[in-house]
Image (cartoon, rainbow, N blue to C red; front, side, top):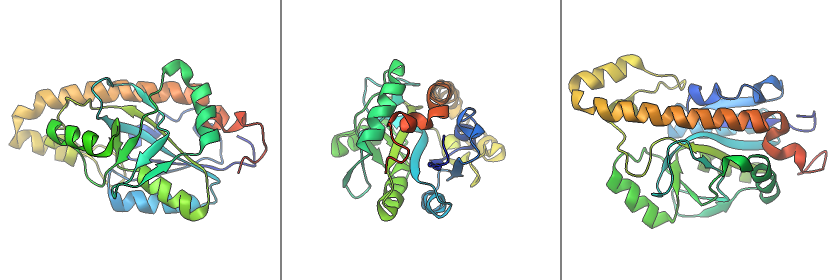
Length: 239
């Protein structure tokens, strides 16, 4: 990245941030974590703007809503659907550059719907997919879109599918994240003690999340040093 850019990334989990090995070598990069909490996602997005970031990315894991998406599939949505049903487009030039850069990963470009709550059941995923016309869901992208709109900044979404459309999110996964985005092991163990029958679903989710993290690491290797396509735009300042 050149001095003309200051890239801000909002993620939910520390494990997502840890995939940014190449990108994090740029001292101008700013990362905020939401801990999968709506109020912290908004605060994190606002922090990135206040820190002087010129470009914003919503980055990390997402839940699959389309049956054809598998764990580890890359998502580069062209638009998001906000919780109130509005449809907002990502920056088109940046999106095209990212698609070119990350094309070997065959990213899906369908709409991503944002939610303020985790979509845990298969039935809820199906209903949301039908209602929003979206292929995946996350909990941070609408806050990036809102902060970018208020500040007049370009924004992008880079996500990888963790849980698939037919996959239930077990209770332990929903309580197992601290506000700092780390794994809350005590909360996970407590949930398992109360409901040991969820262990199989939790193991499956762990494997799926591992596939998604590997995809994010490949994205970072392909695009971190190029600002995920920003430096391919052919301008010192693509704003």
